[in-house]
Length: 225
Image (tube, rainbow, N blue to C red; front, side):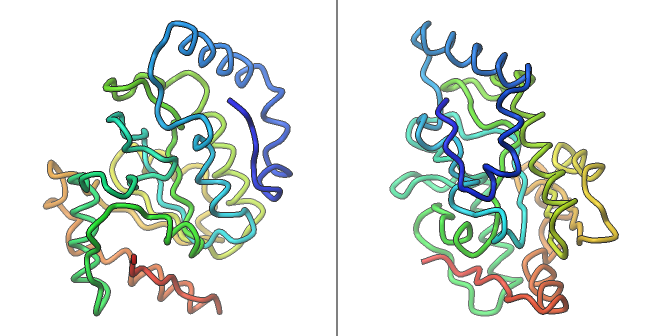
């Protein structure tokens, strides 16, 4: 776990790396490697969310739970998969909502959301690693404390951000966010199991842009190329 973070994030989070929970997490990940477990995403991409969206560039946070656990899917951004990989069902539903929410949005033929990261959308999973084909296998090992601190820092040190919380797990993080300073958008998870219970029609993308404009910020270009 080579901790190479974008300089703004490094300044905000560097103290976390010396804390006991992070040392325990490092020990756990090393033990996984020594027992020849396949871990996703690759080591160089574990901190992609932070490195592709610098701290002072964040406008929006979309919180996920776990990286994808299939081969070549995860690359460090929540809900996103590498190009050439089949678009997962939840992301396909996100694209469906975009088609109705953002005029002119055209669903791309891939699931790589790196464009959003460059637009200031922090695509953050609560847990940053997972064992191959074992969803949730790295939960409760320390990552949540680290990513909670990232959310906490954004809430305290930035103003006028949008936090998009899909599903009950993400909505537990609402307690970390100052709702007087930021917009919190909540809806059911976009998975096929819950998307029809309120995710479709929730218009998170247009609501996000309306809020950013009200704060004299540039709206997100949601179109993925």
